Length: 512
Ligand code: GLU
Image (cartoon, rainbow, N blue to C red):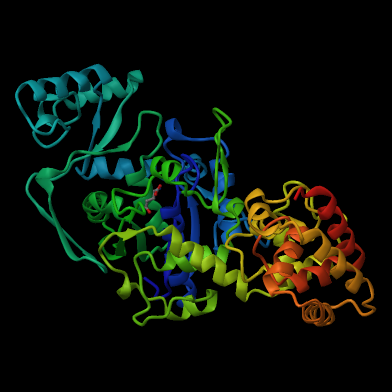
């Protein structure tokens, strides 16, 4: 085996990518990138019953948005891609290995119908057996090439009887493998069943396909979710049975990601209940047209999401938290992946997003902000104006949609005034005070924030008015709300004419 790191991300197109899958892809990506390795995308679509239309396209598009790039298995530079197991099956890649396993006594043909399988499970249940599986005990009473004569088997095959090929799991064997996170893991073969390797339609199952593909593609590190740990003993046995022991990869099984309350695996159900997304980008279910939210549409920056996810199960060994792409690549290390489940902390993710937005250049934010304008408030607004609004708001927003949503007043005259603020801040003398102020403003010739402030302060002094008495109604008149960026900055940006006009409109519209 060559020393070059070869990893893969191997999603099944059974639906959208879950945030846990994104983390798996990310860790593989970082590891490959750090070691100048190959990173393969392989779509594992052999289970046609669970195939969901649009899932493959979704996965590719979501990974692209995230900036998780592959060196192989994607459309690029004229390369064919993605690698799909269904295509590889059509090239006859798997059947021969299943046949080889049968020939070598590691697998067998099984002709049992689904009724016969049900009856077997029923019998075991009635007998009080804890597990009802096809294994080294039950295989002896089923219809397979271990119990039927050679002629009978041949006859059935020639006749075209449907059959599957099952792995003949040894009866008594300790199966040991090394996991970088968990150290040595041991399973006893008596607890494992005779898994199907090739289905009656000639399609390999995941287990056979994954071993054949990982070996043929030279994969030497398998980094995947903890839910696959229980499949690994079978995989290790398959490597042995196929004479590929030298190809057994280094394993890393990633700890679970838990719901924010620490209870249970992070789930869509809990996400719907608690208001967090579980998908990177939004997903429309092709069956019922239902749309599930995603972090892209929720207004998250992909790099912030990745930085946050990088720390769900891994740490850099110091207290660094903010790590951009290059820094993550530099620091990432499989040895620092932990084995305890990590809580998905939405507030923390928000903090990352806020911080990334703050640290981004306004020019880079501009196209993103323009994408979050559901009501078309930015239409016809000059980029230069939006850039200034971004500058004033970027310290205050959490998600991209906040730019327009929290500060619509940059782009339009307020359509109403917050009632609570009116009640508290708009006094009987407010109209007169603002009118005076307006006249002072009218005389300003160079309309900028400092000049406006100067004139404002001078007016307070001359009229012997307290700050709050003038500032709060002014803010209300200009924005319709309380809070936000500095009032002089707002006035400066919307312009003199608009400022004066908003004062007039407010005086007219707000009852005293
Ligand atoms: N196709 C499997 C999945 O959907 C891949 C598991 C593995 O990485 O081996 O996650």
